Image 1 (cartoon, rainbow, N blue to C red):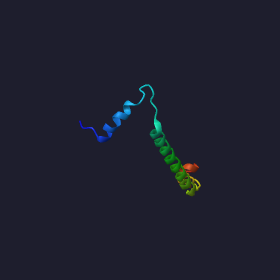
Image 2 (tube, helix red, strand yellow; image 1 turned 135 degrees about the vertical axis):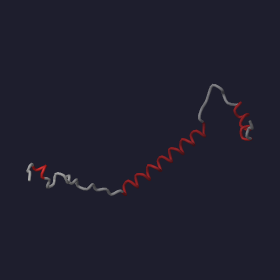
Image 3 (cartoon, rainbow, N blue to C red; image 1 turned 135 degrees about the horizontal axis):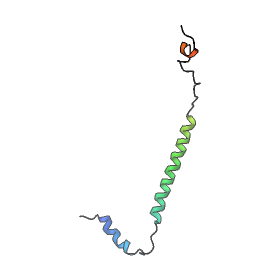
Image 4 (cartoon, one colour; image 1 turned 60 degrees about the horizontal axis):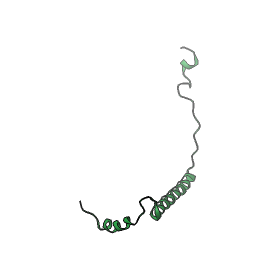
Length: 77
């Protein structure tokens, strides 16, 4: 298995970490802030698109079977 050069440079930095204390650090905050900003932008865009929607529901018509049907009126020919 080969190791990347970036990994070999990070190994000495890992030795300096306190084994009893693990924190997300600055990178964790930056990633969380970017995700939060992306969600905010998506919600803003969705709100703008939803405001453009002009939907009026058509009135519901009676079923065709009940209109002028002899069986529905109770008369027989």
